[in-house]
Length: 110
Image 1 (cartoon, rainbow, N blue to C red):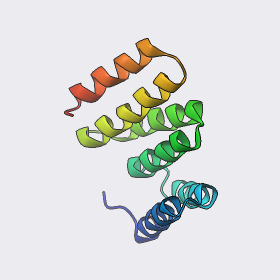
Image 2: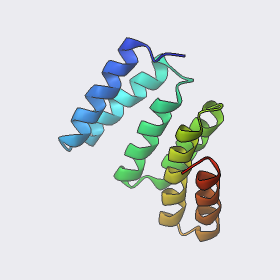
Image 3: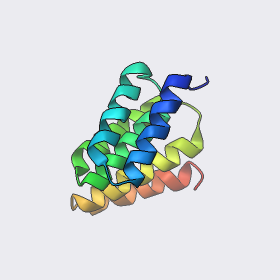
Image 4: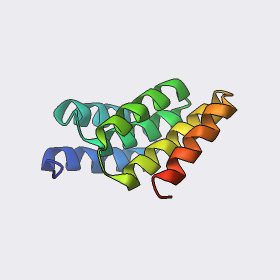
């Protein structure tokens, strides 16, 4: 399935805002993209990565887990999402969970 043009535009805007250091506005663009395309794993990856950068590790992990559920057969997306989960779990002090997430990332074809 193709990503709707409005969602692609929001993802691009969010990326530009993130690069400029405006994480709050980047977040609002990604949340809007999520409302428009609630089953698009790329949105979940971008949002979970942003939450990780914001230091909201629990949110990052939960959003990435939702993205994994939506990623279907897209192994590259699963790998990327499991990598976010591993980083979030590391930051939360869950080394066993981080190790398991890294194993799943490798299994998805790192």
